[in-house]
Length: 226
Image 1: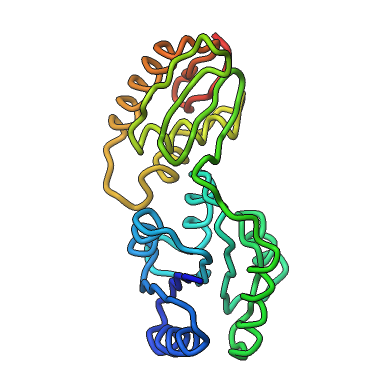
Image 2: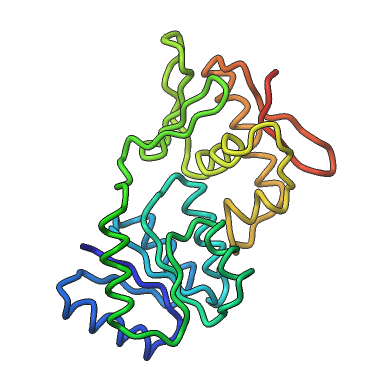
């Protein structure tokens, strides 16, 4: 099994890497959220061990980003915060299990084995569906469900953006939320969002879809029927 560990506590990360490798796992490691997210996008891992509190992009934002992108990798979240509200927040964001620091390595390994037993592997054919649309997240290919539709290739940014709309149909998503979920901590001008919306509308029209992206001025955008 190939496991990615994202943890900014370097001594703990070294200890985790050592023990996991000793148990026969392949281990990738990242010290911050941005680096970890790039590794998830470039390499296929079987499980993610994710620290809740990270510099820059924290664990919750990483979870929300990968789940919005259609990745159902099992996630074990590590946290020094043991409050009920914090656990609920992490689970709602997409974590599969929670382990409070400090913890015993044997318990961490037991939880990893338990997650591996019950996981449903993420396949490259993972689809997001809404209205008459299907979006294949592996190939960033959009199509209309009927046989009359044609495949439309999206950029990665367009795909991330559209997947958010498709998972929240008929809900107006604020501009700030869209920028945060798609670009994260990157320094992005708001005009970039408008440009991507323009491209998406054109591609929805090319796919001959019944829906489009609707503007709510000074608020944000939503996916709805024309």
